[in-house]
Amino acid sequence: MQPLIITCAGVGAEVTRAQQPALPLTASEIALDAAECRAAGASIYHLHVRDGVGNPTMNVDVYDATLKAIRDASDVIVQFSSGGAVTDKEEVRIAPLELRPEMASLTTGTVNFGSEVFWNPPALIERFYGHMRELGILPEFEIFEPGMIANAQRVYDETAESHHMHFDFVLGVPGAMPAWDDSVAFLAQHTPAEATWSATGIGRSHLAVTKVAIDLGGHVRTGFEDVIYFERGRLADSNAQLIDRVASIGRAAGREIATPDQARNLLGL
Ligand code: KMH
Ligand code: ZN
Image 1 (cartoon, rainbow, N blue to C red):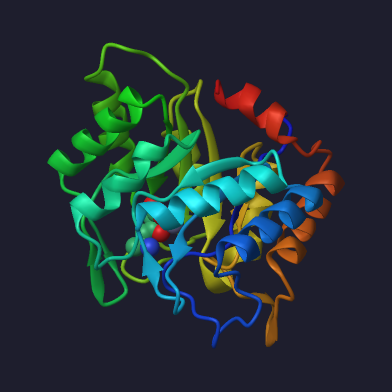
Image 2: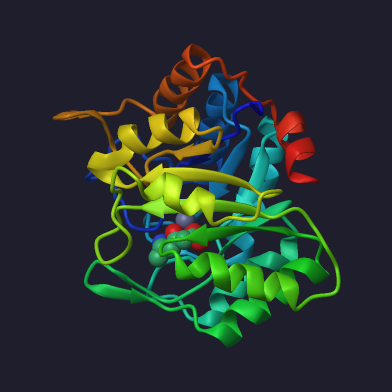
């Protein structure tokens, strides 16, 4: 099996410090978090940023400062969010890509998201995908529903240029695909054979999804965007604590933990 790529989604757009006191918010806090997560076994940092009062923002200057701070602190692969928050409009979501991170997330379909709608119509997907490829950014296809795999394949097939395809299954968002026992296996079975994939379970399903993904030879995402508890009734102390647990489960299952350079190699970066 491949070395295990662990992605830290350490900030997110929805969780607050009132819910998770260890949530990193500023550029320096996020850079320190990324370095700690790297030391614990993370090779990718999925990046959302926050404004001066801790609200989610897609401000290019804030992304720029945070990207620089992370790069100064660690060799982790930085993956920008192009999803932002559900209230962010298309123009705002695409803007930070001009900073050319190595990777960016790309959700390939519209989906209910709690009581809101995460809006990703076909024209937006094509535009974001084309822009990422022009800038040399590898998309990570975020899969909240099975049809999104087909949408990712379609947008990939419509471009002349080939590249490695990497998927992330996000299971258990209220309104989207639940983390059923067979959800990860089902989605993995329908991704292209040469692609790589990771999985994350939102909230209570998190540990079960982690274990299944590792056993099936996939990769794993964790962090406060997806889960704030370490176990029932006990908040995680840090993102690094969550990464460390995934790395331990991976090692116990016989998986080597990928360094960022090993992950770059697996992802064709
Ligand atoms: N915050 C969600 C609405 C992504 O980063 O690309 C979207 C999200 C996905 O987190
Ligand atoms: Zn995200």
